[in-house]
Length: 179
Image 1 (cartoon, one colour):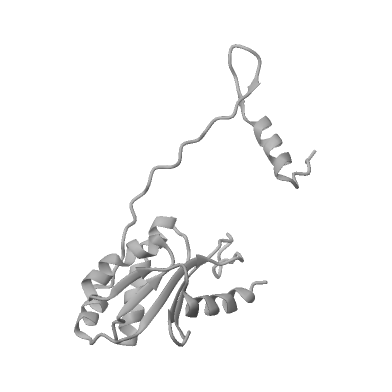
Image 2 (tube, rainbow, N blue to C red):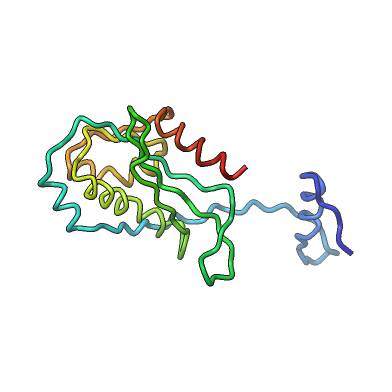
C-alpha cells in the first residue's frame, strides 16, 4: 500500500516513522541530527597552453559577467540511461548583454570535479576571444574563489556582485525555454 505524501507534514510523519532504533525497550521513534559531510577538495583543471596564450594578449576594457547555475530540466546523454540536471556556465559581455559562451556541465563523477572544470572553461573561452577583460563579475562566492588564481595570473579585476544585468537578461531568456 502506498501513502499519499503530498504535504511536507505527511512526508515528515512517514520519514520519522521510518527511523526506528532497536534498544532494550520496545522500538521507539528518535530524531537524530546528521552532521554535514566533510568538505571535499576541488581538483582544478587547466589548459596551460591557453593560459600562456592569454598572458601574451592585450587587455581590453571589457567587463564580463559569469554565472554558474543548475538548469531546471533533467536530461541524459546520448546512449545514457540516467537522467541528470545539467549546470550552465554562462559568460556574457556586461554592457551589450552579448552571450560570449555557454557551457553545459555534468556533475560527474562529483560536484567537486565539475566545479573544478570552471576555470578551465573560462580560460578556454577567453583564449578563443583572444583578449583578457579588464574585469570579470561573478554572482557566487564559489565561482569567485575558483577564478581568483586565474585573475591573479592574468591580471584582471575579479568582483562578486548580486546584480549582473547583462547576464540576468540572457539567463532569463534561456530559462524561459524550460517553462
